[in-house]
Amino acid sequence: MTDEPHALGIEPRAELFPHGADVGVRGIGPSRASAFEQAALALTSAVTDPARIAPQERIEVACEAPDDAYLLVDWLNALIYEMAVRRLVFGRFAVSIDGQRLYGEAWGEPVDRSRHMPAVEPKGATLTALKVERGPDGAWAAQCIVDV
Amino acid sequence: MDASQLHQVSNWEWRLEPKGAMRVPAVVYGEQRLIAEMDDKVLEQISNVACLPGIVDAAFAMPDAHWGYGFPIGGVAAFDADEGGVVSAGGVGFDISCGVRTLLTGLRVDDLADRKDALAEGLFRTIPAGVGSTGKIALDETQMDRMLEGGARWAVEQGYGRTEDLDRIEEDGSMPGAQAEAVSPRARKRQREEMGTLGSGNHYLEVQEVAEVLDDAAARSFGLAAGDIVVSIHCGSRGLGHQIGTEFLREMALAAPAHGIALPDLELACAPIRSELGQRYLGAMRAAINCALANRQIITHLTRRIFADFFPDTTLPVLFDVSHNTCKQETREIAGEKRRLFVHRKGATRAFGAGHPDLPPAFADTGQPVFIGGSMGTASAIMVGPAQRPEHAFASSCHGAGRRLSRHQALKQWQGRAVVDELRERGIIIKSPSIRGVAEEAPGAYKDVTAVVEAAHLAGLSRNVATLLPVICIKG
Image 1 (cartoon, rainbow over the protein chains, first blue to last red):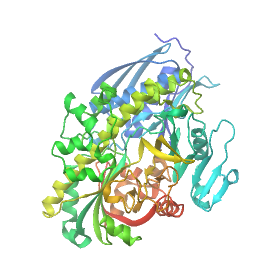
Image 2: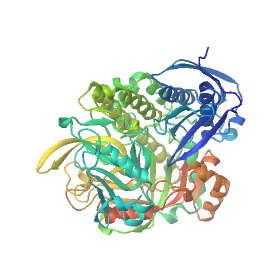
Image 3: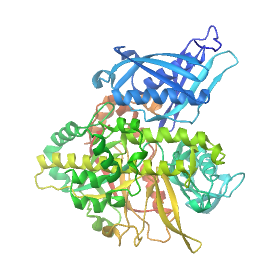
Image 4: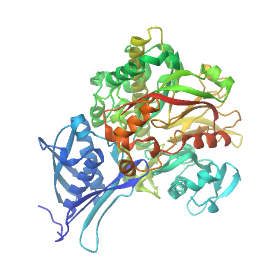
């Protein structure tokens, strides 16, 4: 389904980076879709430890945007919305991207305050430090600042 | 920040003359040390704000300014619709109308004595706080519309508080011009179970002691004396405001080229005030202001109920309620001409001085209270609008200290349990559903609020009235 190049030998990873009162989320992966999955994992890690989240419930998300950067923001904001209205935290993600259309799945469970110890509630993904790009090594990086 | 780029106007005011695409100067307040410690990004961001269409006079950064998104936190700018001025979702932020409300208790420190722990527990059990918490008030669509257009006035009509509370809230508790129909179904859904909740992050409810009075006359007029106990509530428009910010930021950024606006930073997303999008945002943003006012009103009601369990004679009157993430239409005299301007304050507090025509009658002779929030364990301040007229920076002052360390750095440096224990030894009770949240919000992660308050005082943005120290903190 995806039409994008896939770099071999790139280990997917999620990172947080500092930003004043808020927090930067960054996903790195061998493909754009993988980088988006990792960015979502970074979003979760700003709230709680993703390893503590059981995949009890699955939700689906679809987004369409004019470019990669807005697609990332839309993906993260769709997750933030689902987290807020369903009171869930997500620990696993699957993304496929076709052009500028994204289809995503997230698995998680209701927030358990004693087990998850959620630190902050994400308010929204911002357009600050927003980048989706492919590096010289072929690795995709997807990042932005999230207001918490 | 490299002060060598700036022209020093006084010990407390620094100016960057327009260059490049800047339409007006950028002005930064603070003494030399604060300026030196300020992030370079503040100057970059406030200079970008100075490039926006229809900006009037200057773009201002308060002494607590720090790197935000688009506008710096602590940024103030006003726009004139007659000159093609804009309204900016990025200039208000996600937490629309986040603010502080302070309640008087009539209690003295000694009155709490052996009831402090039980009071803390009662407040913690009653005021929903933290990620995933829900309020007990679920609104149907009709009630939601009424709340969005009525604000704290709606809440009082529902039995949450008293009519006289409204005299002590900006806009008399109800922001005019709110358009419930401009608020999306998703924003409404996000708010459905969040009325009367504190939220998380740096939001809190604190029981505080007036530790020091610095302006006797103003303190007396506000009903404050050293040793008094007050309650401060810091929160905003919850999920509804966050969703409105999210939606309009995207829409405004994408529509900017069609409006002929070149954005120096996407996060300055804005639209002409006299455009359909600008008007729709103003309607939705004002509805979010009402949501925040209603939210703080409901929390006030819950707080009163708990205090009454322990101290039956207390009524907890509102001292004042201020918002620090807003865009409001205000009249200003510029070069002898009265103009209606759209004043954006992002992480900045309105600070009307004595005699300002828009002040509530209770503050006509003193100026309005200005609340500067601290973090668990650190001081907060009550200030008052400045004596001189016209006020600086469209009558604005700072709102809090700002972070010194990122959340990540704080988490590496402190453990939540140890922070709670250490504060307990100092007589401060912390109640939070998240021990990790406590570590991220550790007092040491924040700058010293005293320096910020002093800078605001000396710069003439607002006058220092009293210092508050925390006794109990309910942390989201």
